[in-house]
Length: 413
Ligand SMILES: *Cc1c(COP(=O)(O)O)cnc(C)c1O
Image (tube, rainbow, N blue to C red; front, side, top):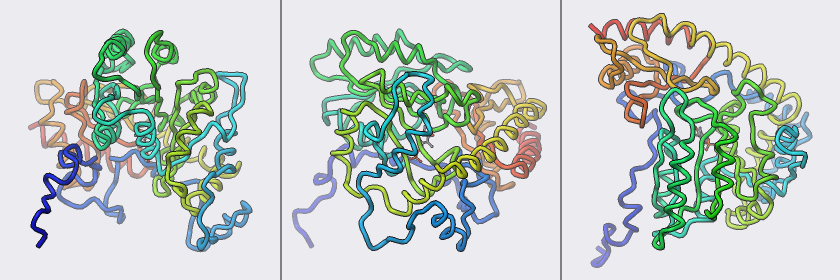
């Protein structure tokens, strides 16, 4: 017995009040394991897998072929990850947005983009004083990370569906108000492009207007988790644009198009002075050796070619869904864009209106009866009645389309 200990008064209030980020797979009764009995279309993973043909035996030869020692496990990993950073730079140095060239000095690599989101917040925001600005509907981790750090949240919704663009006048006005407020400042603006759950790419000019705010002293983060699913791959990423803007950070990840959510590798491109700060504040050995080795294999020319093959398969299934879904009674409009490996669709009631009760019933029935798991997004700003459907393999999409048609027919009776 510890007479004075009281967790409720000992822990930080913002942590006690925390609603942890909930993964889709934690949300409904049957546990949605990836044991082959479920079709998992909820977390925007790449169902065709990683570029590495990883079997227990091929892993070692893959690594050896890439000249990498996968099994130097008794040593601490390289804290700087220069070689991995160089490969990431080469991937994005295409001179579509600048004549300058990215180098490893422009990079932070972390345990998924989730670490980059958190490191940026801790770098710039003073707890219990500063705020971040987000544009709903958007990725939930920005808000969770803000609360963990006791940093406030200013929400400026995106423009209405299906454009889901930055409301530039409203964002600029919120930044004006922050500049004028003695009690707090907005230090970071998190933009997601292509957006989750919107699938829409933001306009470069809109981002430029925020970056160029005349009096606001802060950082604009563009989260490009889905950038490799955009049609025009040469101009899609703004990573190298960080060489033109000292206050721009561009985040990427190997979790989506690269199909490597399991290794936890994210990156933040930024001007070298920001990268120095982020690298100074991170834990020294944040990137495990196997993660680094596998990431470097995926970023070799062979790895990139294999990624492109899987990407092309997903893009063709995305086209198929866009053609097939409108033919199912009860499926409403496509909201948002088509630049990601997921699509946001309305579910309609018998009166033809988008309806959250219908969408939730479809979501639950799909999971429990047909073991197909999608994500309910109807409570997000501007997403009434919407499900977010990750594009999967050809067989998964056949299974999904059939299950959805049956489910909607039953739910809408
Ligand atoms: C999936 C996703 C990420 C990826 O996070 P990781 O930590 O790199 O797996 C980042 N941002 C958005 C918007 C996402 O949807």
